[in-house]
Figure 1 (tube, helix red, strand yellow):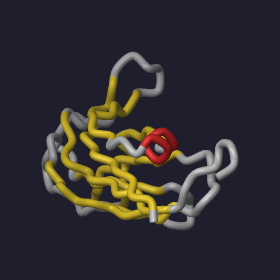
Figure 2 (cartoon, helix red, strand yellow):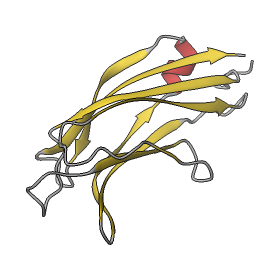
Figure 3 (tube, one colour):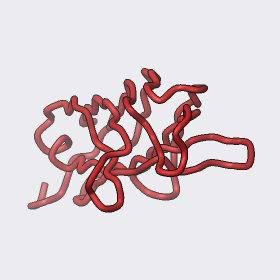
Length: 133
């Protein structure tokens, strides 16, 4: 293990729930779902929760981490499914390098910042664990 390199293993990301999800131009209820990826080639997505700004998913997503990749961010995008496509509710990223290096589980609410940083478009509760292989 050289300096700054990470072990290989499995990153397990559990998306528990969301609260106060909202996008700017729409005040009703969303049909939210979440996309998650470490790199663009492999996006995973949650199921869609109908008509709910405080959805509960309790879904777990598995990402394989290859040895040595040092800069790892989990990208999270929350979308509102509608008839013609999807509107973005918000997005954020979680630096998972510390989780991988320390082996300590991450369990916290993550805010979806608004563009100007004044308000938030809601929050998501995640548990993220890393198991070296």
